[in-house]
Image 1 (cartoon, rainbow, N blue to C red):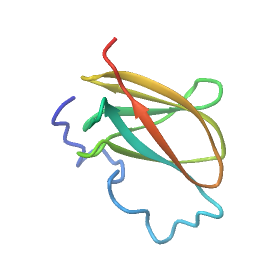
Image 2: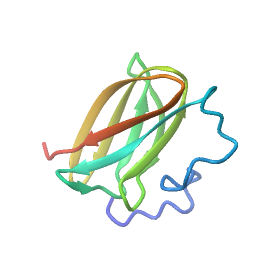
Image 3: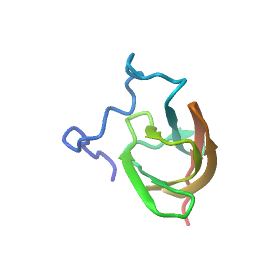
Image 4: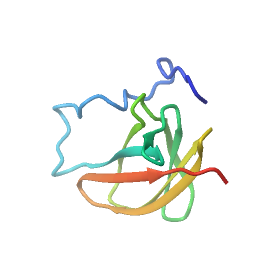
Length: 107
């Protein structure tokens, strides 16, 4: 997964600022950084799973380990898969921006 070229994958640039058209009073944004220890993990696959554990979306982290999802308010699980290890966390997201720190570790 290291050195993954995401240019053609169709996902928005994970490191880019939020578009000006995003109305945080009406939208839910889940954003964060995948880290292995203190180091960001570029090229990690981050999956968004709904409250029932069903796959909803996937993005690849930026060079700085950043990811972003536009979702509905509610309970979500984020799962990161990378060469440095895997990790997951469950969050409750509401309208606006929910910041997430997602740690991975070798199994």
